[in-house]
Length: 221
Image (spheres, rainbow, N blue to C red):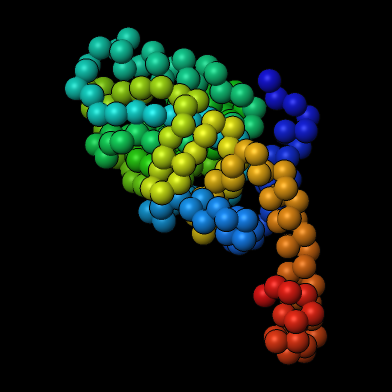
């Protein structure tokens, strides 16, 4: 179940204006492989997403049986909770792993977006729906006879990044970053402090302070 504290944390994450602040903090704390591959990009320029990972694991499959192919995916959609971000490791490059009806369903059930190490289709509709989507590619190919969902809410790995169910996700035009759930509250708090400090640095620079002096004063640049 969602708690008010968890949903509040997601909203605080959404208010962080850029992933770079979070990446720097995670680096400083020893988490140096938390950024997803740069090929995973936003469908719509200017889109951001923030939420909690509902992880999806899949694999190539030649099976055409609707009960085998579609029912597991529909069960996953039925378990979407407010604040979730669908995060998919499809292990496949031959099909669209998200489309119109899936996006509509996920959004209705409270999902805040999707991140796919693979493909999507019906992308004009998804844009109009306003459902944030980060993916590797677009294709009209359906999953039937090409791919199946193996499991969900299990540990997955995209690129060098290990992602567990409930980890926190932030995506913007620079990419997508994963915050381990156990670190989320402290990392988000630190990111809020960094954003405030960088605003002070920016103000000082625009007032004519030398960049070295600004760095020495505020400790960041």
